[in-house]
Each structure stands twice: as C-alpha cells, then as structure tokens.
Length: 68
Image (cartoon, rainbow, N blue to C red; front, side):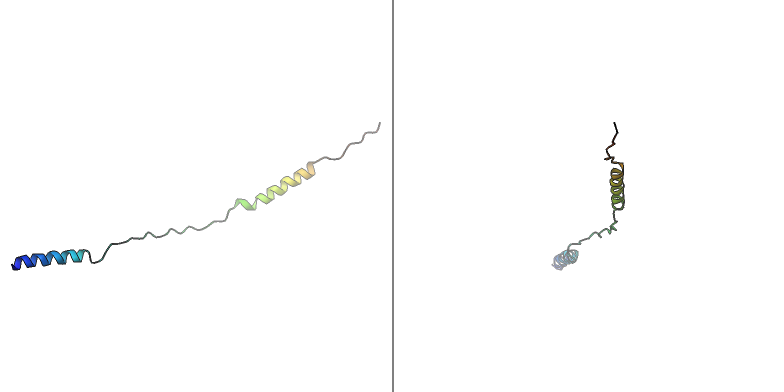
C-alpha cells in the first residue's frame, strides 16, 4: 500500500512541477530601422527650374519683319 501511495504522490508531484511555470512565451525583438530622407527630392526643383528657364529663353516669339 505504501508503494502505491508513493508512486501516486511521485506522479502527482512530477506533473505539478512540470506544469508549474505555465506556457513560455518568447517575444521577438522589434528591428529598429533608421528612417532615411529621400535624396532625390532636393534636385527635382532644380531640374524643373532649368527646364522652365530653357523654355523661356528658347521661345522665339519675335516676328521678323521684312521690308519690301
């Protein structure tokens, strides 16, 4: 009878120790990414300005007058 009680107690204690901590949750660390500013935006107004300047200077609206 003592052997049966000892084995039941060992079984009971073994399972309670195994389940004592509960589930283990492992959280992944968030990866830190540095935000970079776009580099191409600074040159776009410069290119647009050059194109507008070329259109203004290249436009030849002067009518040539020829004398008969």
